[in-house]
Structures are given as C-alpha cells and as structure tokens.
Length: 532
Image (tube, rainbow, N blue to C red; front, side):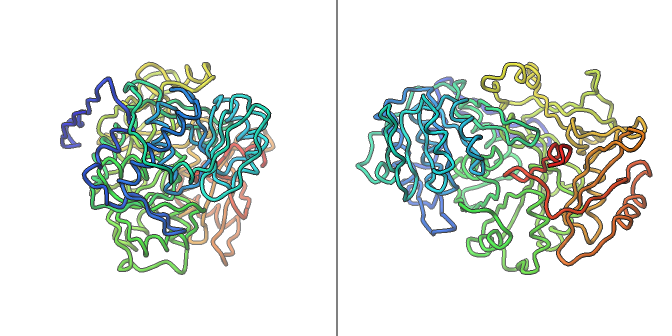
C-alpha cells in the first residue's frame, strides 16, 4: 500500500491499496518493529496487551476458527465488552478470512436472536456477562457451529447438533500459532456492523478490507494527526463504527496505545481514565461532554494531558464546545460519520474549529447538499447531505430495498439535513425524518434543542413535531434539567423566543428524567414520537 500525503486544505492524500490485501495483516504488520509497545490496557482490571502479544493471539484465534471448521466468508458474531480480547478476536477473524459481525452489547435477547439468524452466524464469541441474554438466540440459530466464551465464564450447554464450546482463554494460552493469512482481496467483505437503530430496526452493514485503512489515513492521520506517541481513549465502544476507528484502526495504524473500559462510561469513570492514564486524544459524544461539564468533581486542566478531543453521534451544541475549551484549553472536533461510511467524513479541524457547525469535508470525501427534488442546493439552503468517499459500505445485508434507497451510485445518502456556508462549513439541521414544517417553513429540531441548552438550568433537550388542536405541526420539547435546578416551561419558552424566530419556539415542554438513546448516545426521537 502506498500513501502520498498532501495538505488537507489542498488536494486529499492518495491511498492506493493492492488488490491482494488483508486488513488485519496490514494493521499487525505495521507494528512488528515495536513488539514490546503497549497496544491495549483494560482500565477496569489493569490487564495489558503489547503489540507482539496482540499479533500472536490474533493468529492463535485465527487457527482456532479454522480448526472449528469455519470457512472464509462465514460470519462470527462478536458480543463482547471492550477488553483487550476484543481486538484479538476481531483481527483473528479477518486473518482467517472469516467475517466478524460486531454487536451492540446492550441489546435485548430478541435483538441478539435476530442478528444471529439474520447474519447466519457460524460462530459466536461472547463475554460471560452476556450469555444469559444470548441463550435463546444460541438455541434458535441452526447455523452455529461454535460458541467461544471470552474471559472467565461457564460454557453454555452443547446443542443436539454437537455445538463446539470453548473458552477463549484456553485458545490464547495455547502454543504459538503458525502465522497463516487468508488470501483476501481489498474488495472482499471484511466485517459487518449493525446500524445503531436510532431510526428503527438495525441493518447489517457490509464493509470491505480496504475501508479500515482508508479511514485511518484520511481522518486518523489527515485530521487528528495521530502518532505513535499518542495515548487514546474512546467512550464510544468498539462495536460502534465511531469507536472501531477510534480505538482499533487509528491507533494500530501508527502504533499508539489505547485504553479500554468494559463498563459504561460514567463521568467518574471517564475522568478517572483521563487522570490515571493521561490520554492525549479523547473521543466522546455530546451527551457525555454535557455530563462531564456538569460533574462537580471534574478535574482541573492541569490534571489532564489532552491535546485534542472529538465528538460524533449527534451534533455538538456550540455552548458545550465553548465551555469545554474554556475549561480545558482543548478543542473538540465535532464531526459526523455513519455506520454506512464507517467513520467521520465531515469534521472541524484543529485550529479551524467553528462551534455550532460540523466543519468541512474530510480530505478524500466529496459532499453535496440536495433538495427534496434532487437538485443541488445553493449555499445557505437546507437539504439532505450526501457523501462520496472510499469507505462507503457495499450494501445492507438481506435488505435490497433499503440498500437501493441509501446507496445511489457514487453517492451515499446520510438522512441528515444540512446547510453549507460559502466558505465550506456545514451546519446540522436534524435528521431528514425529524425535520418539522411549521407554517410551511422548515424548522430544525436541533436548532431549537441547541437554543434550549443555552439555558443554565438545562442539561439535555430533544424536540419533535406534535399536532395542535387544528392538526397543525408545532415543536414540542422534552427537557432534562440539571440536578437541583427548578425551571418552568414558560421560562424556557421565553428563552427560546428571545433567540429564535417566533414560529420556532416549543409550544409544549415536557420535563423528563432522561431521554431515550442508543448505546452510542444518539437520541431516539422516533421513540419520543411514539410516546415511549
């Protein structure tokens, strides 16, 4: 593979990948000269994995899959918490030519059963904490050949079809494996990610071997400037497209060290990691940044070593970005990516951050804003954002209709509404299906939410459209107040009317303890519309 770099204000870097290519072999080979360098550390247990150990164990796992009879292109579902074993399994699958399918660890039993059967998984690697939730899916999935339990756990009972059950620890503590790499191509299916479900039923999104390194070169190096000396921590988990790049592809592409946290990233846990392990890059989401800023026990700037932060999943309110930078002297690079595009394709850049916008196109990606009738919008007009770039998924598995609706030739439809400024900065307007028309004029829910969050008593807000007595759509807000705050609905309505056009203020405000979200922090507005 050849990479020629370029200034990202001029032409993008060119990434040339050979036809015969295995993504895991590439990532591991980049670190053969640093076998003793720390690759991963588990913040919960202190367990560590060097780059040399990572390569050895990934090959051991690849051999175990072959021994279990799994053929290239068969699928293995990963239902694993974020520990150093996760990259071992993911990379081991790819070395064997087997396709890992990363699953959200917060799924319900029916969700897991759906994914096992939808993917026709022949293997399952599961953390012991998830075995009870997975048990019904294991029994129902006729294609399963092997279940491997990660960590200390009890093996599930074998099925009548002689299901092979093993402990991952036994595989990884066996003799060193012969290093054999499947003869895959850059355009072969490499791994799947299921969409987060922020707009409904998850979809199996199929990515190629070339996609991992494309995102590492174009965003990891081109925007973040990640290097071997960085220590990174991603609050977004590895099963999420955002987290996969943050905590696996980007650091491995340059030999950086990564901190993993198996449990939920509470403010106490996150600040504990930032103080103890001193990451230089922190990847978060807007709701987490809001919670961190609201934490009375937050550390001082001198206690941290951050050089850059990122945000994705939802658009970052300008107030949160400004307050974070004022407190910690560190910019948050707000960006947008998707499961379909694998990582961030539109982002603010170091030294060029404009809070309240999602920044500019990432080098190597082309963007356009399209009106409802399919025409390119002029600068300032709102339309759907579409993306062309080298990491676009090839399809949704078993879902031809939605594949055709999303992947339109060179362009991938984001489902997000945006406006573009004359100097190339993009401003988020909400999901396409979240946009409101009030009095015949489009209203962005995000704009109203961002305004509500500038009130000192508001922690979070979500806005949907609701019909009034005349069956006309008007904005309704669901608001989470900061601890100890007492704010009236009328005060919040007045706050919005003072800053936005009169027709945009929420006619109804409902105070709630929390907002429905995906495991990756995206607000599920469709659940609010459904009254859930």
